[in-house]
Image (cartoon, rainbow over all chains, first blue to last red; front, side, top):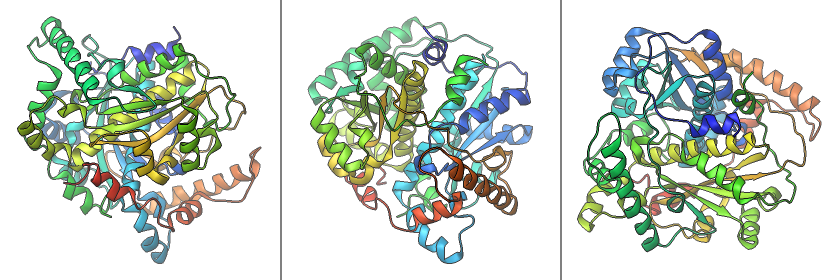
Length: 248
Length: 248
């Protein structure tokens, strides 16, 4: 199997890193890789904030509730950024382009651009032997993160990416079987999808009983329903709109 | 340089493919790679529709206006999918979890999940010598694509990915310089960002004058402002909400 495929299939999230900071060369490789991802209509509608300031890291760790946000080799925050496309526009042009910049279509464009860049960063890091963990939990208090990073209008923080030398060796997590996420020409019938998911639920239960760390009983469906039963991050909706995105 | 980094840095979008259909083995490698991407809270909130039905391909090509949507080795459509997380929920549970499923936070979760999976698919394809092109233009008529693929509530098509054996050899496109997308601890001052973009604009002009195919005069900022001056895909906003996403 070739190395690229091996890197991709070998992924597991690392949540404990050695304290060694990434070298500038490592950081440069990761962000150059990020920048080579495809981008919608050449918009490059994202920015990356590299965090090495200990006090900023500590604040982000408190917000996310995860110690590896503070203790890692380097922390990146990926942002959806539609500020740059209009930066050299005249006031009249700005007003005109904001019909697009502020709608859901371009919120999608910027979010997808940022995520594609992030996944390149992730695989580049793993390709040079480092481990990574995405941190969606910076959205636990997205407004404070936004202020901390000084993001202007039309820019919002989406997620963090902690990178560093792995200091544990977790197993890869199970994934839905192919039959439950890959469909030919048309979406699967609901009854067939239910069967696939019931089957997967049993497999997840086995994984949680057997894994080396943090053993428990659980199934995927019950876990999802439990997690989603309490309203989560309800301030994201008004926050995003307050920054001039997803409001039209 | 290792092979993973080489694959990532070597990316350029391929818009002309040989007619050879992908083998099942190639398709399986690509979708297995997609499934190994990180996913927010284990949600795996995406689905992939593989399109090999010529009439579906032809309809999607008309919507996107791109011939390579029809002529390629295989076509994938990546969907944000929050249908599965609630599939085994009781009616009462469904009502409860919909407060989350239908808000902007989880619209972000599903969009990011789908994009991370897609970028893994893209690099896996490139890693085995194939070329790819993302197709955001299926959103030119997102409602028709949605109906064509039979997507249920809480599932929407985001973008296509055409994959196949390259039949041309385009140059990689320029990218914003590091100084315009990577910032340390805080977002860059507006005046500095303006200077970086003005400098990049000049570089893009040189690229368009020199490239082998489709030479022209253009700058990045003027191109972006021109493109964004006419309202684009304004039906995406009501469509997404009509599918029960991004509405709370």
